[in-house]
Length: 304
Image 1 (cartoon, rainbow, N blue to C red):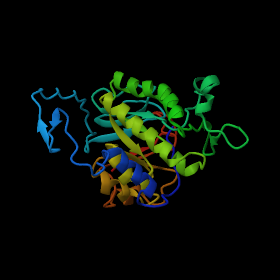
Image 2: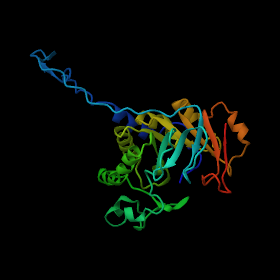
Image 3: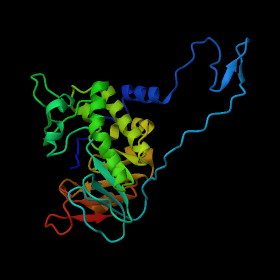
Image 4: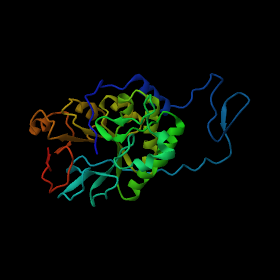
């Protein structure tokens, strides 16, 4: 299920996250001992790189992926999949099927466990979950049936990817176009998780998604949007940005490639007022909190 967190602390990335992003995107600098030879070259006695006779290596094959449309009917169906006339973009759980003819986004809870997945993380994998000072497993107080993953070390991140990587691959194999990774902000809510570990795991998810031919969405975490975009996220999915007055944090960075969901039980203004905001996403919808399927008495849907 989706998670909606509190208001953003800042509308700019932390210095630590910026440093990690810059480090991930830059090569090592030279030590001042002269120019660095380029691949396929030799260095003459004067220290100048000269081309060798060997042919240039063949470029590595690249995987392409598409961003979601910015016009048409959008829906968020994590609580149950159903047909909607004219559907152009839809978010569905990884256990559901993509919508035929629509750009389909696969929901993956990448930093916490899903309800009912206790057996997956039990036994030998329990060390991949966050523990408190007394050794007890940590749960999300807002979602008490979700345990928190612990990406603190490289070994733990490798273990998490052994479980979550195939989920991302499965989204691609089933025909989804993109993946959204929930709970990116766990390090801001649980002091035991280092920011560096959370960002490194996010980067690994980005690499895995792109390798599978999927675009990948930043989910919430408005205060870190600029740094997450530099890290490699392609577009954003935001819940309740109008409630927290943080929609511009996404649209200023991702432009029109933002999908916005508001909920009926928390909106302090009429939905028409949200639609009139200059910073709202082109595809903005109003849904019931549990995102139930059409036909349920609690079902609610509207779009700007």
